[in-house]
Image (tube, rainbow, N blue to C red; front, side, top):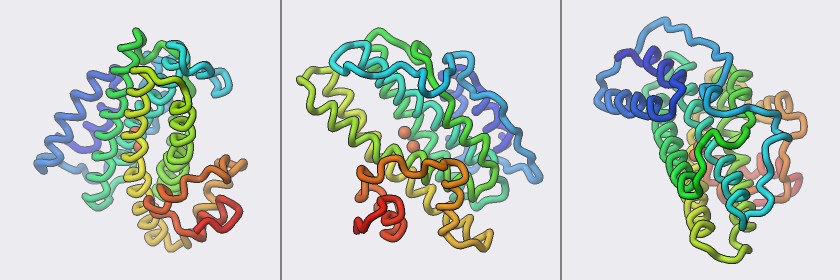
Length: 271
Ligand SMILES: [Fe+2]
Ligand SMILES: [Fe+2]
């Protein structure tokens, strides 16, 4: 099995089941060191996300709101939105392994491990969607994560933007959703959603941490200062850090952010 060629097929697989089956076979071969790393491989630029045949893509402001979280519809919208982030994150983790050739083996091991986590996260949420009588693809989605991966074609920018900005934003956002959910009158489905989001939040710290390690590796390799992070984020996200007051300081520190970085993001001393 060829590493990059097979990854390309997994990323391009349009059906979740086909993607996951192919991934598990590939990951098993990778762990047994039965994979050949092609030399001089030139990665493809993907023009469309792999879910185009499953989901209707709309601008972010047109994605259905998850207003009433005690209603089935509100819960489906919330679960679908998170499941879509997870599904996109599968392809993003696979793309991190696919796109950057000639990296140490531990780099590929890290991103394949993340892809495996993201598949599990997606399946957890899909199961709850099924319990509510819904499927992945029932609700319109946006393709902001795919776009971010398309725009960042260097290791330095990819690591800064995808794990160290977008996934890190998730560390701030999930506790707020959890807080909202915990205030609602208790029921079985809400309890399941809360339990799943708590597992995901805990495991996402590790993804950001992997991004942090490889971002710092890329800085060293390029001979640039780690402060370049803020220039990269300003270039792609001129609005910067959206929730300076709600940064998940503990999770971000665990994931590798320094106090001086957190100070810039929060616009005040936080640690
Ligand atoms: Fe995830
Ligand atoms: Fe993740």
